Amino acid sequence: MPFRKVVDDDPGQWFVYGKDGDKDVRFRVRPLPLWKNAEIQRTFEGMTRQVKVDRQGTAETTRNLEKEVGAVLARASYSLIDSENCRVEVPSEKAAQAYRELLKDSSIQAGDVVALDGRWTDELRKDFLTDTASVGVPAWIVERAAEQGSVKVKEEEGKG
Image (tube, rainbow, N blue to C red):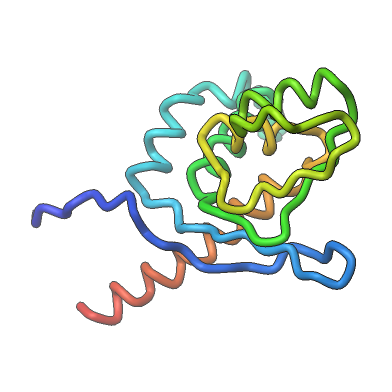
């Protein structure tokens, strides 16, 4: 089996998520490598709580939604690299304090609209992706990462 270097610096691709006024909101998303996906899967093992099979052979699965959501958030956090025209409104003083700490910007006040472009850290990704206002973003990012991964696998298969 050939040794394959683990590369964590894929530049990713830009994808349009939506609009903010007349500007496209875009995210740079990198593919999720198999090794990283396996690492996340191990972290969130036990996503299926129980599988019951009745007399007719019908299976009923009970899922652990908390772990499933955690796995999606971890995949999205890894895959999100940067943004363009991504802004958040700071709704309260408590949120302003959190953003001041996350962005190391003492000028942020409640009511401000803050640009996140070029300011992404692991902590900011986690906060942004777990925010209920951005509820659809994590799954969307994971889908874009998976699309890129599928393309890369097909390219690799074509080389062989």
